[in-house]
Length: 86
Image (cartoon, rainbow, N blue to C red):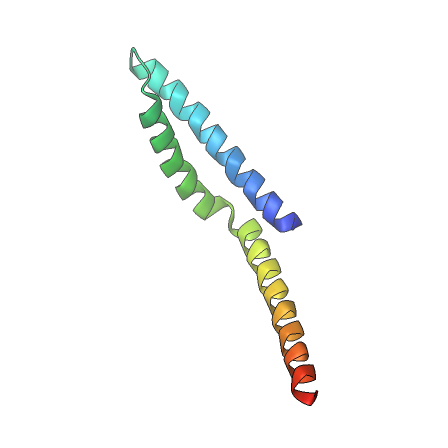
């Protein structure tokens, strides 16, 4: 679970940071700020950045999910084997 929260918090921080930068640039360029444009541009930027910058946390999260699924599968097979012997 730790990997999930680490990755999620990093993604949120990246989005918030991207939103702040886009908001600042938009405020310098335009007279009025369109919040929808700011959020959409920030979402695209943070998605691309997270794809490049968050490789390691994403891999650790994927490994933890895979290990958890393997344990669940092993428990299921064990229960199935016990059921077959009964």
